[in-house]
Length: 312
Image (cartoon, rainbow, N blue to C red; front, top):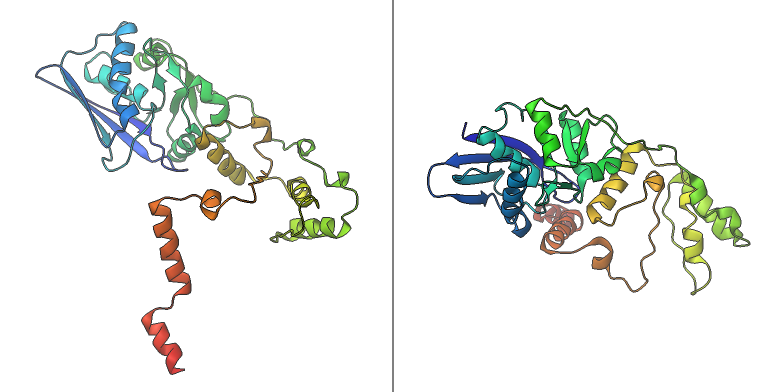
């Protein structure tokens, strides 16, 4: 077999679209090409995959290797495609069973020795794979974060040899999850009872929390606006699992990590008062085009609406 297909997930915002990794071995001078709108880090996976396969005792095929990351118009970035590319080469070269990759998804960055390193933004991939009913092989370093998704079938791996042994049937990897405390601990949040005075502001906080209303504090610096606002999450109800996952997904993509003990607590952000609108909500060409179109749709009447208004 000279053609193999594996499944992986890209990272596009808070979404993780499915990527089909196609590996084809052809006759000709030895070469290794990756196509499918792959950025620099993905292109560099050629050297990581080549070394990892050789250092794990497998034979790297001396043929013309073409790796296609489909869909071709979807940007691919990061080292998450290393593991599926390596497995695709091993299957295409006949070193692993041809049907061993069916219905499985793989995610992970390889070192030159074959160790599997963690990746950023694994949570959206776990959510998407669970929704499609696919087991996911992922770095063991990401297991705790991935275990936040209920019903997921996770196979944590630390080395390429673990994956190949599972696919060859010599040493099966059972799905498992890390223990996660799903009880929100409000004791970690600032307590509104600590505030002395400010009776009117505390009542405004209580009314806003009870009714789900917006709230605006206005006053001179040092009057306690931020101190009071930071205590609003402590009187709000716990996040639902869906809301908590959305919050954790943003933290996962940011790459700064997040405290798993606080994943069900409502966040509080305190941007500086000099922050611009773009700094608060993001920017870029796509954002401004979307914002402009929304403004035109919501606030600028069409010609037919304008003529009707004039006639009236």
